[in-house]
Amino acid sequence: MNKPTRILGFTLIELLVVIVIIGVLAAVVGPRFFGRTEQGKIAAARSQIENMAIALDNYQLDTGYYPSREQGMQALVQRPSGNPPAKGWRGPYLKAKELPRDPWGNAFVYASPGKVNTEWYDLVSYGKDGREGGDGDAADITNW
Image (cartoon, rainbow, N blue to C red; front, side, top):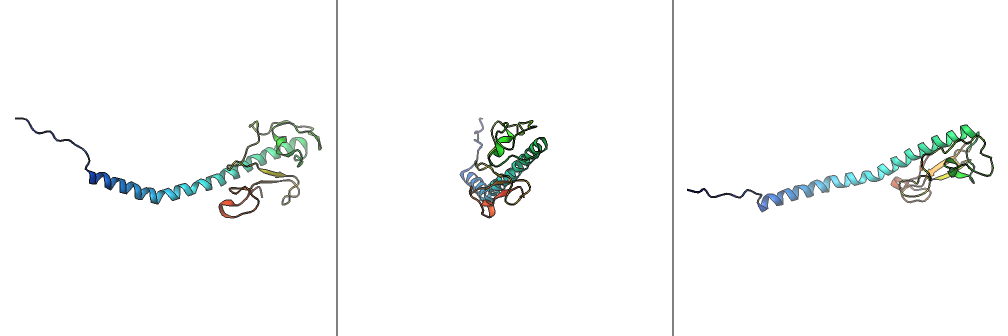
């Protein structure tokens, strides 16, 4: 006599319970995970500023000064012209062929001498909003 075959699978109730559990987990974990994205961008901007500061310091060691405002950070990737002359330039000081942009796609702001660091330079990312000033996630990231 043949035994009836039983089809194995999940019931509709079991599937709904699993979907509800996944939904609850996503609602609890999702905001915490996605809130870290902005913190990661801020950390990346700080790291980029530190790397560019090292490159600027190496430039200063080779030439005796930091690039002028007019020469800008472009002096880190190609020999600058104008004053002061780039005697002793041994660049490029950054591996990239172009200057890096901050994690929000904006150019870093360089000033030498700086408003804050009057003896050397200011290096700033204006952060999420791309404008000077701000607080929280929109705060400026600086080298001071």
